[in-house]
Each structure stands twice: as structure tokens, then as C-alpha cells.
Image (cartoon, rainbow, N blue to C red; front, top):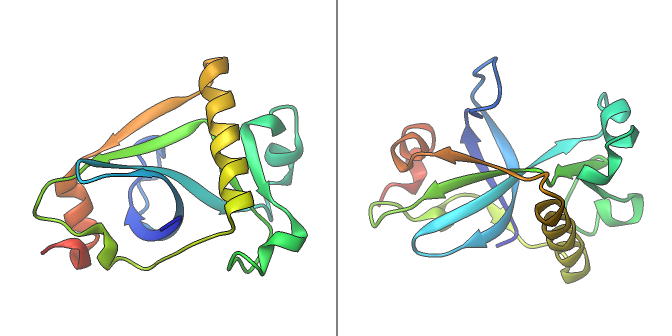
Length: 139
């Protein structure tokens, strides 16, 4: 499972919106899941193609369809969302899919680069919030 769709309120989003969103699954174990938000490039070109463009991994034109995306997209490799899991949830109940190994490796490499540069932040989401926003995960 490389991509998962779940509803989440981002701790770094002042609007507090709750919406279903695609996430790249960087790590998944019985104990935790580490996610990175996937967003459409449309309307965010200045950010994604601007001075900090190296913070983002773009889903390039030829990769969009092959990897199940509908529009050009990007992953912010500087912001990780971590959820400590427990035995009351089954994360695999959420919609998910895989991407090509080439794209997955490129994303992982970019994340590691951001960590080494000290440009990587971790935001915690509680398992209780996960269950509140995504009832399907409850066993």
C-alpha cells in the first residue's frame, strides 16, 4: 500500500477543514503509519515550481495515469503526519493503491534528502482522531 485515502484535519492547517485526501504511505507497521500529503499542482504552481521546489516531489506527466492520478500532483516531502496505531484499528480497510517502484523510490529519496537537510517536520495525529474521522478503520 503506497497511497491511502483518509479523512484528516491537518494540525498545521489553520482552517481546520476535514476532507478525504490522498496520502503517500512512507512507513506502515503494527505500531504506526507515516504519511505525506498528496496535492494537485493546479493553483499551487508558484509554490511547487518556486524557490522551494526541491521540497516537493512532482508526479510527472507520464506518471499521472500509470500511478492512478487524475491531475498533475506533488508530495510535500518536508511534512510528515504520524499516527501511532493500536489494535482497535485496521488501516487496510481504507481505500488504497500501489504506485510504481520508481516513483516510490524517488519519493523516499526526496524525503531522506529533506531529513538530512533539516527541513523535515513531524506532525502527530492521535489514533482517536483517526477513528473519529475514518470510522471504516475501527475493528
